[in-house]
Image 1: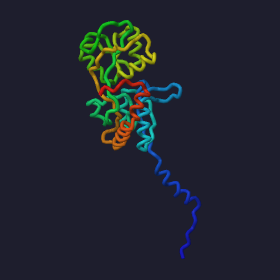
Image 2: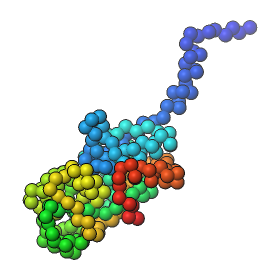
Image 3: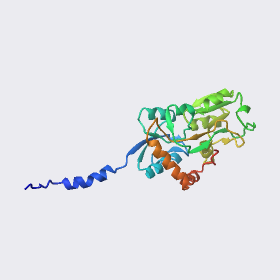
Image 4: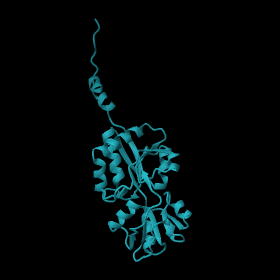
Length: 251
């Protein structure tokens, strides 16, 4: 007769194994600290928050993964993703053909174009890039606006943040500041930028959609798209857009 010996702690270990196996993975998400309302640093909590942070957090909740948001400069997002320092990009990043060569993008999240801020009192009727040849302008490093502005004949200076651009517009160092229209309009409406206004009649030339990015071929993309589709279907996406006071999607 074979006697079964009781090993202390073995039963507890066996019972704990399924729970450990079900612990959801935590993915590192790169988001910028300067892209309000999409992503920004909340100084009260010292954490990155915003529309795109809440979006990827909710997608993760629905799809069974956690997120750890890492503050990453915009110009370093793709390099951080391709080098595996982060697992996802969830920021105000347009899914351009050039970027698609380096990373995979989700289905479109939100579509918009560039916005133009000018100094209060500026009265020239600029309605598009064709009207602005020779104008001194600012754009953020790493954004897709720089080359189209230069091609249209603007004198372009590059900056590290939208805030730096708006400062120089208000001081008269440049005549126009370019940035993502929802970001620029939101911050002007919140009173973040003093002495500038948005060109209300301007029609954007560089229109695109932002998406969540993964490394090429990463299986996580299927889960991201599934969560995104579910949020669009049940109204959660519309509610999130309204919460962050984003203008209507221009798609």
